[in-house]
Image (cartoon, rainbow, N blue to C red; front, side, top):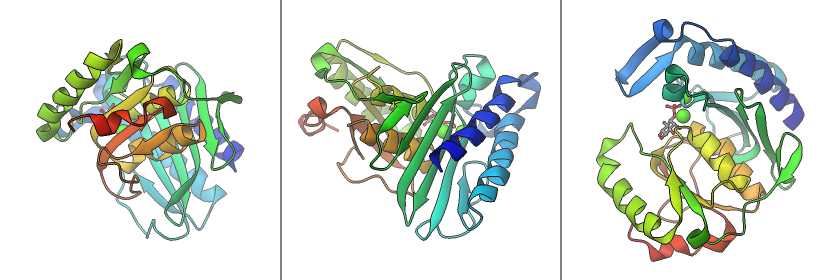
Length: 254
Ligand code: IPD
Ligand code: CA
Ligand code: CA
Protein backbone atom coordinates (compact mmCIF):
# COMPACT_ATOMS: atom_id res chain seq x y z
CA UNK A 1 0.00 0.00 0.00
CA UNK A 2 2.75 2.47 0.98
CA UNK A 3 4.60 1.88 -2.28
CA UNK A 4 1.39 2.22 -4.30
CA UNK A 5 0.58 5.57 -2.65
CA UNK A 6 4.16 6.79 -3.13
CA UNK A 7 4.06 5.84 -6.83
CA UNK A 8 0.85 7.84 -7.33
CA UNK A 9 2.28 10.83 -5.43
CA UNK A 10 5.48 10.71 -7.52
CA UNK A 11 3.35 10.84 -10.68
CA UNK A 12 1.45 13.82 -9.27
CA UNK A 13 4.85 15.48 -8.76
CA UNK A 14 5.22 15.64 -12.53
CA UNK A 15 2.24 18.04 -12.66
CA UNK A 16 4.08 20.34 -10.21
CA UNK A 17 7.47 20.03 -11.95
CA UNK A 18 6.08 20.76 -15.41
CA UNK A 19 3.93 23.71 -14.27
CA UNK A 20 4.22 26.82 -16.42
CA UNK A 21 2.75 30.32 -16.41
CA UNK A 22 1.87 29.88 -12.73
CA UNK A 23 1.16 33.57 -12.08
CA UNK A 24 -1.68 33.59 -14.64
CA UNK A 25 -3.15 30.48 -13.03
CA UNK A 26 -3.13 31.83 -9.47
CA UNK A 27 -6.21 33.11 -7.66
CA UNK A 28 -6.78 34.59 -4.21
CA UNK A 29 -8.95 32.42 -1.93
CA UNK A 30 -9.62 34.77 0.98
CA UNK A 31 -6.73 37.28 0.68
CA UNK A 32 -3.40 37.94 -1.01
CA UNK A 33 -1.82 35.66 1.61
CA UNK A 34 -4.18 32.79 0.79
CA UNK A 35 -3.59 31.61 -2.77
CA UNK A 36 -4.74 28.69 -4.87
CA UNK A 37 -3.41 27.82 -8.30
CA UNK A 38 -4.95 25.75 -11.02
CA UNK A 39 -2.14 23.28 -10.28
CA UNK A 40 -3.33 22.78 -6.67
CA UNK A 41 -6.74 21.85 -8.08
CA UNK A 42 -5.27 19.65 -10.85
CA UNK A 43 -2.98 17.75 -8.45
CA UNK A 44 -5.85 17.17 -6.04
CA UNK A 45 -8.15 15.93 -8.82
CA UNK A 46 -5.40 13.57 -10.06
CA UNK A 47 -4.76 12.25 -6.54
CA UNK A 48 -8.45 11.84 -5.82
CA UNK A 49 -9.02 9.74 -8.92
CA UNK A 50 -5.92 7.56 -8.47
CA UNK A 51 -6.10 7.13 -4.69
CA UNK A 52 -9.79 6.24 -4.71
CA UNK A 53 -9.08 3.69 -7.44
CA UNK A 54 -6.54 2.18 -5.01
CA UNK A 55 -8.93 2.17 -2.01
CA UNK A 56 -12.45 2.56 -3.46
CA UNK A 57 -14.28 2.64 -0.13
CA UNK A 58 -12.09 5.42 1.34
CA UNK A 59 -13.30 8.92 2.20
CA UNK A 60 -11.28 11.66 0.44
CA UNK A 61 -10.42 14.69 2.60
CA UNK A 62 -8.48 17.18 0.46
CA UNK A 63 -7.67 20.84 1.08
CA UNK A 64 -9.34 22.10 -2.09
CA UNK A 65 -12.60 20.20 -1.82
CA UNK A 66 -15.37 19.90 0.75
CA UNK A 67 -15.25 16.74 2.86
CA UNK A 68 -17.75 14.06 1.94
CA UNK A 69 -18.17 11.16 4.35
CA UNK A 70 -17.05 10.47 7.89
CA UNK A 71 -13.25 10.40 8.33
CA UNK A 72 -13.59 8.86 11.80
CA UNK A 73 -14.74 5.58 10.28
CA UNK A 74 -12.93 3.24 7.88
CA UNK A 75 -10.23 4.47 5.49
CA UNK A 76 -9.66 8.18 4.84
CA UNK A 77 -7.15 9.90 2.57
CA UNK A 78 -6.04 13.27 3.96
CA UNK A 79 -4.43 15.26 1.17
CA UNK A 80 -2.64 18.55 0.63
CA UNK A 81 -2.00 18.69 -3.14
CA UNK A 82 0.56 21.47 -2.84
CA UNK A 83 1.77 22.39 0.63
CA UNK A 84 3.67 25.62 0.21
CA UNK A 85 1.53 27.23 -2.49
CA UNK A 86 3.07 30.67 -1.97
CA UNK A 87 6.55 29.15 -2.43
CA UNK A 88 5.27 27.45 -5.59
CA UNK A 89 3.83 30.68 -6.98
CA UNK A 90 6.97 32.67 -6.14
CA UNK A 91 9.39 30.11 -7.60
CA UNK A 92 11.08 29.01 -4.37
CA UNK A 93 10.85 25.29 -5.27
CA UNK A 94 10.04 24.41 -1.66
CA UNK A 95 6.65 22.69 -1.73
CA UNK A 96 5.42 19.22 -0.89
CA UNK A 97 2.60 16.89 -1.86
CA UNK A 98 1.22 15.37 1.33
CA UNK A 99 -0.93 12.23 1.48
CA UNK A 100 -1.95 10.36 4.62
CA UNK A 101 -4.14 7.28 4.76
CA UNK A 102 -5.94 6.88 8.08
CA UNK A 103 -7.96 3.96 9.41
CA UNK A 104 -10.72 4.70 11.92
CA UNK A 105 -9.18 8.10 12.65
CA UNK A 106 -5.53 7.00 13.08
CA UNK A 107 -2.93 7.66 10.39
CA UNK A 108 -1.49 4.35 9.11
CA UNK A 109 0.46 5.55 6.06
CA UNK A 110 2.17 8.88 5.37
CA UNK A 111 3.80 10.14 2.17
CA UNK A 112 5.31 13.60 1.62
CA UNK A 113 7.06 14.31 -1.68
CA UNK A 114 9.17 17.27 -2.73
CA UNK A 115 8.99 17.22 -6.54
CA UNK A 116 11.79 19.78 -6.97
CA UNK A 117 14.38 17.91 -4.90
CA UNK A 118 12.84 14.52 -5.70
CA UNK A 119 12.77 13.67 -2.00
CA UNK A 120 10.14 11.07 -1.09
CA UNK A 121 9.44 10.75 2.65
CA UNK A 122 7.36 7.72 3.62
CA UNK A 123 6.18 5.95 6.76
CA UNK A 124 3.88 3.13 7.75
CA UNK A 125 2.75 2.80 11.36
CA UNK A 126 5.14 0.49 13.22
CA UNK A 127 7.48 0.11 10.24
CA UNK A 128 9.77 3.14 10.48
CA UNK A 129 10.27 6.22 8.31
CA UNK A 130 12.24 6.54 5.08
CA UNK A 131 13.68 9.12 2.70
CA UNK A 132 13.97 7.75 -0.83
CA UNK A 133 13.88 4.24 0.62
CA UNK A 134 16.60 4.81 3.24
CA UNK A 135 15.66 4.74 6.97
CA UNK A 136 15.60 8.14 8.66
CA UNK A 137 15.75 9.12 12.33
CA UNK A 138 15.29 12.30 14.32
CA UNK A 139 18.54 13.85 15.53
CA UNK A 140 19.89 13.40 19.04
CA UNK A 141 20.92 17.04 19.40
CA UNK A 142 19.63 19.15 22.28
CA UNK A 143 18.11 22.47 21.23
CA UNK A 144 21.20 24.29 22.54
CA UNK A 145 23.13 22.68 19.66
CA UNK A 146 20.27 22.69 17.21
CA UNK A 147 17.86 24.69 15.10
CA UNK A 148 14.11 24.90 15.21
CA UNK A 149 11.71 25.31 12.29
CA UNK A 150 8.55 27.34 12.69
CA UNK A 151 5.45 28.38 10.77
CA UNK A 152 3.60 31.66 11.06
CA UNK A 153 -0.03 30.46 11.01
CA UNK A 154 -0.66 32.84 8.11
CA UNK A 155 -4.39 32.12 7.89
CA UNK A 156 -4.95 32.83 11.60
CA UNK A 157 -3.22 36.13 12.16
CA UNK A 158 -4.45 36.38 15.73
CA UNK A 159 -1.55 34.03 16.55
CA UNK A 160 1.14 36.53 15.50
CA UNK A 161 1.91 37.62 19.07
CA UNK A 162 2.19 34.13 20.60
CA UNK A 163 4.14 32.94 17.55
CA UNK A 164 6.73 35.67 17.98
CA UNK A 165 6.81 35.14 21.75
CA UNK A 166 7.54 31.41 21.34
CA UNK A 167 10.08 32.14 18.60
CA UNK A 168 11.92 34.52 20.92
CA UNK A 169 12.00 31.96 23.73
CA UNK A 170 13.23 29.14 21.47
CA UNK A 171 15.77 31.35 19.71
CA UNK A 172 17.34 32.15 23.08
CA UNK A 173 17.83 28.41 23.69
CA UNK A 174 18.99 27.36 20.20
CA UNK A 175 21.56 28.09 17.49
CA UNK A 176 19.05 29.48 14.98
CA UNK A 177 15.69 28.98 13.32
CA UNK A 178 14.20 28.51 9.84
CA UNK A 179 10.84 29.42 8.23
CA UNK A 180 10.65 27.39 4.99
CA UNK A 181 6.94 27.83 4.11
CA UNK A 182 5.84 24.20 3.74
CA UNK A 183 4.74 22.64 7.01
CA UNK A 184 4.61 19.10 5.56
CA UNK A 185 8.25 19.33 4.50
CA UNK A 186 9.19 21.06 7.78
CA UNK A 187 7.96 18.00 9.67
CA UNK A 188 9.96 15.67 7.42
CA UNK A 189 13.05 17.77 8.11
CA UNK A 190 12.60 17.14 11.84
CA UNK A 191 12.11 13.44 11.02
CA UNK A 192 15.43 13.22 9.18
CA UNK A 193 17.38 15.38 11.62
CA UNK A 194 17.71 18.59 9.58
CA UNK A 195 16.05 20.39 12.47
CA UNK A 196 15.43 19.47 16.11
CA UNK A 197 11.96 20.90 16.61
CA UNK A 198 8.96 22.40 14.80
CA UNK A 199 6.00 24.48 15.94
CA UNK A 200 3.09 26.36 14.38
CA UNK A 201 0.06 27.78 16.18
CA UNK A 202 -2.52 26.73 13.62
CA UNK A 203 -2.38 24.03 10.96
CA UNK A 204 -4.96 21.88 9.20
CA UNK A 205 -4.98 18.07 9.20
CA UNK A 206 -3.80 17.96 5.56
CA UNK A 207 -0.67 19.93 6.58
CA UNK A 208 0.42 17.56 9.35
CA UNK A 209 -1.35 14.18 8.99
CA UNK A 210 1.33 12.50 6.86
CA UNK A 211 4.25 14.39 8.41
CA UNK A 212 3.24 13.56 11.98
CA UNK A 213 3.42 9.82 11.25
CA UNK A 214 6.78 10.30 9.51
CA UNK A 215 8.10 12.14 12.60
CA UNK A 216 6.85 9.59 15.12
CA UNK A 217 8.06 6.65 13.02
CA UNK A 218 11.45 8.39 12.85
CA UNK A 219 11.53 8.36 16.66
CA UNK A 220 10.15 11.84 17.31
CA UNK A 221 7.31 13.24 19.38
CA UNK A 222 4.15 14.91 18.01
CA UNK A 223 1.40 16.79 19.85
CA UNK A 224 -0.46 20.08 19.97
CA UNK A 225 1.20 22.94 21.85
CA UNK A 226 -1.08 22.01 24.77
CA UNK A 227 0.46 18.52 24.74
CA UNK A 228 -2.69 16.80 23.40
CA UNK A 229 -2.76 14.23 20.58
CA UNK A 230 -3.22 15.73 17.10
CA UNK A 231 -6.84 15.56 15.91
CA UNK A 232 -7.61 14.21 12.46
CA UNK A 233 -10.43 16.60 11.53
CA UNK A 234 -9.85 20.06 12.96
CA UNK A 235 -7.25 22.82 12.83
CA UNK A 236 -4.90 22.86 15.80
CA UNK A 237 -1.48 23.92 16.98
CA UNK A 238 1.38 21.56 16.20
CA UNK A 239 4.58 20.74 18.07
CA UNK A 240 7.08 18.10 16.95
CA UNK A 241 10.56 17.40 18.18
CA UNK A 242 13.21 14.77 18.71
CA UNK A 243 13.14 12.81 21.98
CA UNK A 244 15.97 14.81 23.58
CA UNK A 245 13.83 17.96 23.45
CA UNK A 246 10.53 16.45 24.57
CA UNK A 247 10.60 18.33 27.90
CA UNK A 248 11.30 21.71 26.27
CA UNK A 249 7.60 22.38 25.61
CA UNK A 250 6.77 22.22 29.33
CA UNK A 251 9.48 24.76 30.10
CA UNK A 252 8.10 27.38 27.69
CA UNK A 253 5.47 30.05 28.06
CA UNK A 254 3.10 29.02 25.26
C1 IPD B 1 0.75 26.40 4.39
C2 IPD B 1 2.20 26.04 4.55
C3 IPD B 1 2.88 27.03 5.48
C4 IPD B 1 2.18 27.13 6.81
C5 IPD B 1 0.71 27.42 6.63
C6 IPD B 1 0.09 26.36 5.75
P1 IPD B 1 -0.46 25.87 2.04
O1 IPD B 1 0.10 25.47 3.53
O2 IPD B 1 2.35 24.75 5.09
O3 IPD B 1 4.21 26.66 5.74
O4 IPD B 1 2.78 28.16 7.55
O5 IPD B 1 0.11 27.43 7.90
O6 IPD B 1 -1.28 26.59 5.61
O7 IPD B 1 -1.56 26.86 2.25
O8 IPD B 1 0.68 26.40 1.28
O9 IPD B 1 -0.97 24.55 1.57
CA1 CA C 1 -0.83 23.23 3.49
CA1 CA D 1 -2.10 23.46 0.00
